[in-house]
Length: 153
Image 1 (cartoon, one colour):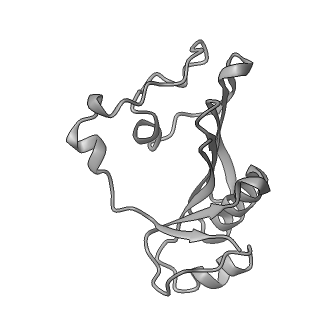
Image 2 (tube, rainbow, N blue to C red):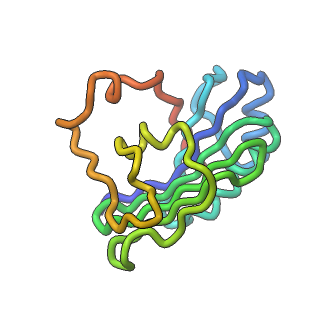
Image 3 (cartoon, helix red, strand yellow):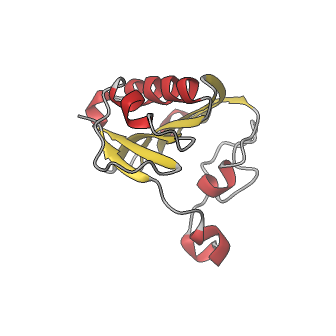
């Protein structure tokens, strides 16, 4: 079983980012402040901690944040996108429960990079997008420089 729970937060390059993150229970593995930080959570803590952290840091930093949970063996996915602390997109998919359970908010610019399929979140779609790497262009695979990985204590 592969399960991931995390949050990706834009830091705005703020030097006080780690102080703000510590208030959310995040302990850094480095001292530098990258443009984006990936915060990993223990799967047993559920997605609630990731959602709360992404929303709080997004609001505090007036930036973007995404919380996600994915269980690949069961095709269960949940994403919450925040802008300045406000939820702007919520996606929940479960293969065993019939496909898309929630599709809320406007399509976000990062979705193509996640799904590799512009129409994958159409409300009338009942399938999770095909993410086969042999269909990706070099541009799709390259993407931006990766975020830092910071587990939550």
